[in-house]
Image (tube, rainbow, N blue to C red; front, side, top):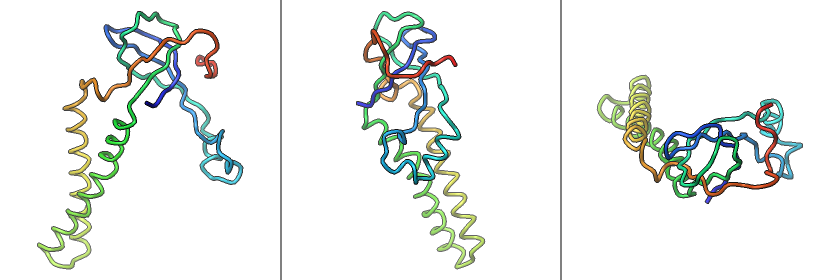
Length: 154
């Protein structure tokens, strides 16, 4: 289970709106001084975001909590978002090349059609599962005492 710390900013029925700080994993990396990604992370800095999470605890606004998300959910989502458009782009390019010959412009057009179709399918899948509780983060526990996050409202 992936975990993230945050602070409850609003409650809405069985959902808690939790503010978290987006951080880079660069702080713990040994190559951070020579990596371009580390340099970008320094420039962009840390930003907060609001996440809706299922709440089965009796929380109040201001409570510090730990959110959880199953790794399998994250992996499935990443594969769907990244691979489906790519695969459909290749399939679309292949179909258009097979139908219309080896014209590069037509093949590129077919690839673009497949790529857009992939994103459309991802959008439809997301829309169909937007209320599916297995895809939403969950408030695992409230945290008392010091929380290993920086002050959120800076």
